[in-house]
Image 1 (cartoon, rainbow, N blue to C red):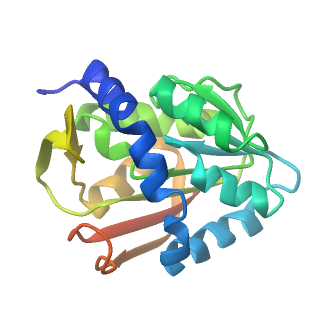
Image 2: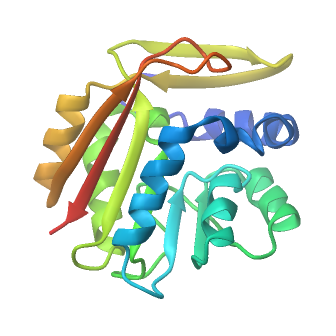
Image 3: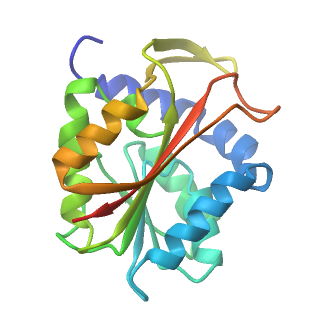
Length: 213
């Protein structure tokens, strides 16, 4: 993939697996207590009444979880098929098709944002741009929750659940991501790592909870 994001490969791959992805992962938060706790903390920190963005939302199950708890949730995803499935499954959530590096949102539109395992599809050189976009669409002091796989490898998938795909997963160094957040104008308030749950792929997971300056 080199230094740039394989946009077409990522988009086509997620379009291809969208139905199976939605079917397999629609209730994944039920088995992720730490994720639920961090999302709850995010909700409590968000400006009351302000919409919350799920950046790289896939079929929208995390956005729907937020909406079920009173949030005005907006899901953004590169895959048009994921967005279409989200609209079908979760009419209480607003969905927009868009790129993390050029978000379809106004400056200061959101009171909080999450990006769970979506930055991992960006080339390393695109991370600063994506974080700058996250800051642009957040209101002052708005919280941002990131989750990603820990490491320095790039894992390529040519097949996923029996479907042909062309997508890379970039594992990330939490210290580097924290540094990029600081450069983008965020204050990192919490950094956590955990081992995988039994039902997950065997990768170490990191969470960074930051606040927009």
